[in-house]
Length: 153
Image (tube, rainbow, N blue to C red; front, top):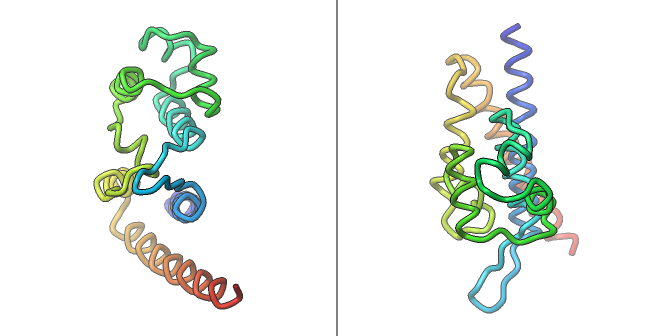
């Protein structure tokens, strides 16, 4: 059973790292020195956090005083969320706003550290070692592939 847990954690971290690498390379939209918000990615993070807390859209909408359909639009990236609603949602989901926005922020150290700490929270020392070795190998593979793609361009 611990091996299955470690494999699941490796898959999760792999997806997280690949998703983060994709976000880094594809969703930053610069307008001069200003970066815009990717509402699709933001909505995805809200949905993931809501589901992790075991809440339905109706549950969260009632707690944040918006409609379930509006929350659905936000989670799909169809509508923009107001700052006030973002704060209410973050508070109700017990996550930080920087965690929801970390792919849109220039300084994401706090949010990513929080995400990794949450992943490692219930791992044994052996699982942590396996995850660390896997993360190091994935980082190397990502950088090698990026170099290869750069050379091919």
